[in-house]
Image 1: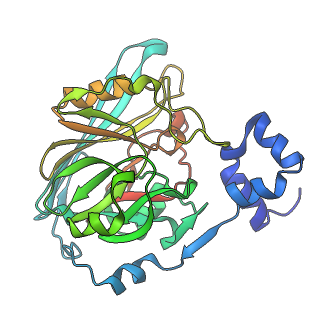
Image 2 (image 1 turned 60 degrees about the vertical axis):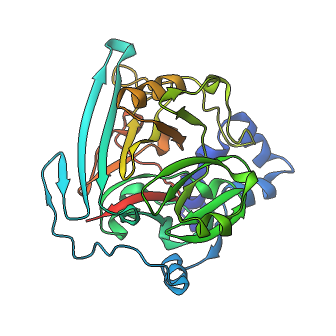
Length: 318
């Protein structure tokens, strides 16, 4: 058996991006160099994201002194209250299993973002659990997998990392409000000046003004080579807004017969409206859909209990 070289490890951890006939054809033909560079090779733009943010001098709540109490399903500190619940619906092959984190913050900046390996760039991946552990997170979900693409506005912890508007994004403001916005109609500097703390760039928005958005069962995101349709019954991660500083995070397991088949986007939207959300937004799903609480994996990705690497997380420090 050949040695497991660094290049082999990189290819293995990202083979899902270029798997299938099209991907193998690319690797076998003249597009091999392009495919490897696009989907496999790490491209690090900022090698120390924490230092980059510190240099920007952006202030936020320091939760390192949090004196929280936790049980198997709750965490409470002076900065937040987190309640985790499990919901199982249907039966047999129509079973759906999903996890809800109801989060109330005392300050919006308690919700932070972190990158895989503390690096910003493309094709840099680490499991949600590992990124969460690196940042002493009591709660975390996978982010928008910004590192799969080179477009979108990426503002994290009050600092701009990328300013290439391309789609509808989700903006978390310092005042606790969360809004869907058109990336192409603004820029990162304007958003930060307006009080934006974090952004996510994936979508689509699935609930607006308390109602399921029409046409979401036809929307596709990043239909380039190596990405899959977001339609049909899939594992999902989404974020809902009940009120200022009151958020709901939902992770739906899927692609696992008899355990959880996943949900469509309209079904995900219905989960959020049932939870009382006025706004909800879809982010990276599939094998990336992951929730971590109090140092443990909450959900069961793809029914296999194994996490897939992702480029970023949203988390709350404990």
